Amino acid sequence: DAGVIQSPRHEVTEMGQEVTLRCKPISGHNSLFWYRQTMMRGLELLIYFNNNVPIDDSGMPEDRFSAKMPNASFSTLKIQPSEPRDSAVYFCASSLGQTGANVLTFGAGSRLTVL
Amino acid sequence: DQQVKQNSPSLSVQEGRISILNCDYTNSMFDYFLWYKKYPAEGPTFLISISSIKDKNEDGRFTVFLNKSAKHLSLHIVPSQPGDSAVYFCAASDGGSYIPTFGRGTSLIVHP
Image 1 (cartoon, rainbow over the protein chains, first blue to last red):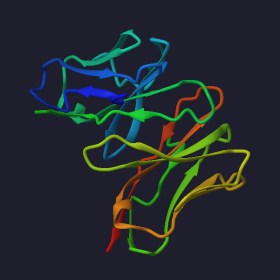
Image 2 (tube, each protein chain N blue to C red):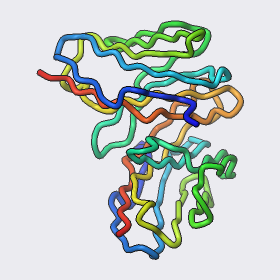
Image 3 (cartoon, rainbow over the protein chains, first blue to last red):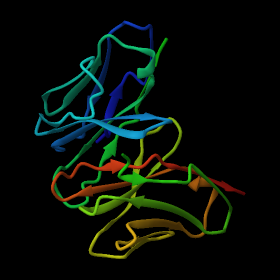
Image 4 (spheres, each protein chain N blue to C red):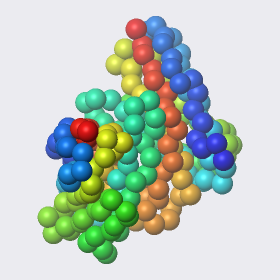
């Protein structure tokens, strides 16, 4: 398996534009997570899906952020409109789900810069 | 309110010596603790874990110690190698949600 695949790796956009980040989880994993990494807050959970259903979206900053998982092999995180404070590295991770330590496998991340 | 705290943003160690990375938590419901390692421009990768029923878990050069009464865990790397230079994240989860909560990370630099 190629691991968790994220695209794009880098995105530079202007304030007010729509940004869509994409994630392909590991086949067979039934849990998917979106995290955001910033210097101030470290790795913070944005949203968690289990079997394609959003379970916990309490970390989504505001209505400008939305996430979907239309099937087991694809998820998107959308920011509309984007703002400079959204600049961060966004990670997608997947796991086998609710078992034991629930080890996550992370993608390489999408670095977003909003000017 | 941070439930998982890594109070040292950075640590510098000489090659061959021991590296000790610390992590504190506040939620007594946490029952699994994990350490992830992250190189620049890559995602975090799983390193080692420990369940709350144990107080030590060892994997090669890496050992994690858990002190439940103090709500404290530590990662020991012996001997440290330059390739260990990375950011280390402590994470914890409880059996109810299985959602890991991460600390802010500690940047380890191992000097040759």
